[in-house]
Image (cartoon, rainbow, N blue to C red; front, side, top):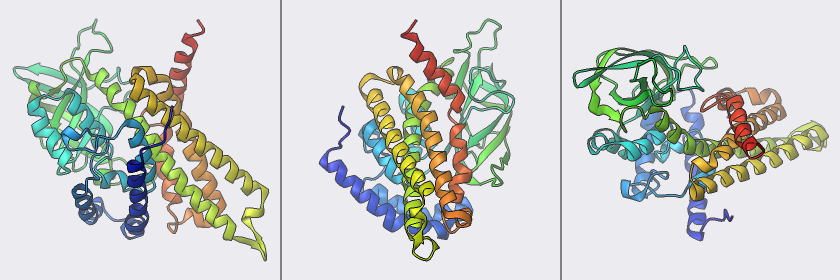
Length: 398
């Protein structure tokens, strides 16, 4: 297998890298601490510029207005734009919208695509994915309490969700609810995905959950939502009744490639900050941190782990592309827990190398330290993916 991109794509990556370094990174300190509405207002001209030059929807096929990148190419791009928290958003490739676009393209009816997908592709709306519930383990979506009951031509939805990311200000939510409540219902085909406009009566956003002391707002918030007798047409069912679990799996698989390569972008940025600091920071006249064997160990371990993780993700991307998602299940699980742990170790080493400065807003590391601990939990906790990978591996030995 060969992960070397075409000369044209290599030139595109060079342009993206230059763009991030010159135009985006300098904005971070200006925007830190501002509300999402203020941030979005300042980023909007950059988004429009990117749309006009064709740097838009890298994960979406050309027939839907995207760049039509392969899974491997998109992974390589995520590693570059992942160096800034705004990178994915500036190309309209941010979660949860990106995943919602993909399943709307795959499963949506013409009417659903016209109403929900097309404005999302244009960057004119935002969406949320509402699956996780506080009363049930998020890593096991076959168990949930939210119900959608038929009443004439409508679903009536009742339930309680949380960590519905970006729900604050979203135009619609994709809600996973049990639609077959019979006692003998198959666990994997009893739930459905339903498109719910956010202004539907009964949709109650209770709060943006405070995470590591920060509640966030708008796109960067994680909402707790109550659905109280929410009535939407049965025609809003995505893909058909009973396909909720299948759609969830289709949505999450390729998304883990995007996450993992974005994490590699964060790793590279933290690694650069760490290396730059230790070669310049004196612990005594003429003696720098870089001369300390402890620090040299951090540098070597970080470089080895980043390189290994990057190649693992590209291997998984190649298998998805050539063999299909089902044949890449083991690799997807492996990269999810391995890359999340590499990410957290590299961030921790970078912070430790900076000492007290690493805890301050003078560097982005403190923000990564807070926000990226969740990488080991969302989209399947480490332990879930380790169990899944081991089961797949052991099949060939039985």
